[in-house]
Structures are given as C-alpha cells and as structure tokens.
Image 1: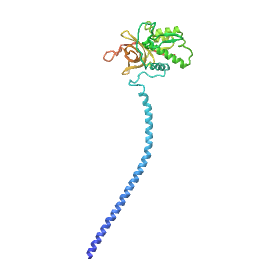
Image 2: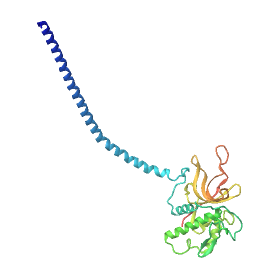
Image 3: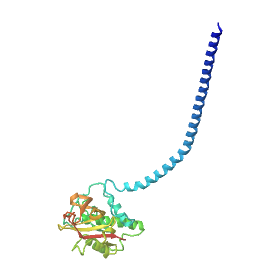
Image 4: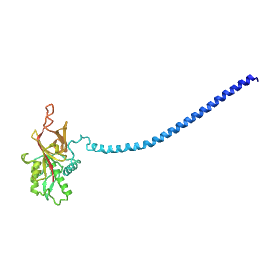
Length: 294
C-alpha cells in the first residue's frame, strides 16, 4: 500500500470519528433536553395540581348557595304564574289555605236550590254546641255552593285554630248558637248585600275586619263580589291577576256552576283595557274583602 493510500485512509478514519463524536454529542443533548422537558412538565403539572384543587372547592360552594336561592322561586308555582299577592305569615289565613287543600280528592259537585230546610250548601252536616247548624245534601253527594263551602272552610279553620290555641269547649269567639246562626245568615247574604255579607258578619262579631286596599289583601282572605249581570259570588282569594302591574282580576277557590263544583277559577273586573273593552264583568266597586282575625 502506498503512502498516498495510507494518507487517504487516515483522512477517512478522521472524518468518520468526527461524525460519530457529533452524533454522540447530539444524542446526549437531545436526551438531556427531553429529560429536562419532562422534569419541567412534571413540576408544572404538580404545581397545577396544587392550585386546581382549591378552585374546585371554591366553585362548589357558590353552586350550593345558588341552588338554595333558586329552589323557592320554582317551588310555589306548579305550571302557574308567579303569585302577585304578597305571601304572609298570617296564621289564620294559613289554616284557611290548608283547609281548601283537603278538598283536592274526590268529587264535590255544585248544587244551589231553595230547599233550605234540607240543604244549606255544605258538604257535610256542621254542628255547633251540640246542635245541627247547617245541613248537607241528603243524598250524601257532598254538593255545595259558594257561601256554603266558604263558611264551611271558615268553620273548620276556626275549629283547628281553637285546638291549636288550647281553647276548651265548642265555641267560636264565645258566640252562642243563636249568635253564630245570625253570623251564618249574614255570611249567606240573607238580605241586602250592603247589610249582609261576610265582612259585616266578621265585623259585627269581632272575628275579623274589612280590607279596602286591594294591595293589602293576602291569600286566604275571603271575598264577596257582585257582577254586572246581577249575580254574585263568595270565594277564597288565591292571587290577583295583573296587567302591567295593575290589578285586573283575581284567581280564587270556591264552588261554582261553571266548574261543576269546587275548583280554582279566574275572573276579571269590569275595568277598561287600553282599547276600550272591559277585562270582565266583576264590579270592582262592589268587592268586599274580609280577613278573619280570631
């Protein structure tokens, strides 16, 4: 082999050595960079783990508070508008509302006749101080009419009230049988409406008062109203109906022919809309709102 060949081979070996060394160094750098990146990523992940946990706990607490706030607004109203009559802790009104709930099951038809000696518009016979006060329909069908069923609810609520207050004996505000019977006649409008209605009965025997400001009425108040067609009705107030904040009608509970007995219903007052037509035919000036205050 000539010196020329030896020199050429040495040159090749030298170049190969340089390439191998470069590859080794590059591999070390890549490995080191990868390792460093993994360490940095792990450190970053561990830091994120530490900071994420408190934020999850912080977010959970407000969610629970929001649930507590939202629940009451969706609760009172099962497929019905939000009440516009202010709710009130009035204890007797609550007993009235509890009583009307007891009529939700079964059939309670409507019946109005002049057979007063055998039927007085209540679903069951009512007794006071050991004597028969009002009679249910002899057929036993639990029929009623408006003044009868509203008085029955008042009477049952008073019994409940007396029991809760620990009052002994069968008495309502100390009234004897004759006084309570006179109370019934006024409640039943047995005479001119201006002198015989539920408000007159409540005030005469100091069992309640008249509410003249509609905005002060509450669910569980009793209402007697008259219509333009010379008919009238006695009901338990559930809510006012409003149009742009103005009271234009009411939602109530009672017994009426249009619902064939006990049911909730909505009617409107004879006030004018913007187009000059009336909302309904209840005479707003002939509305008597009575609140029981035992």
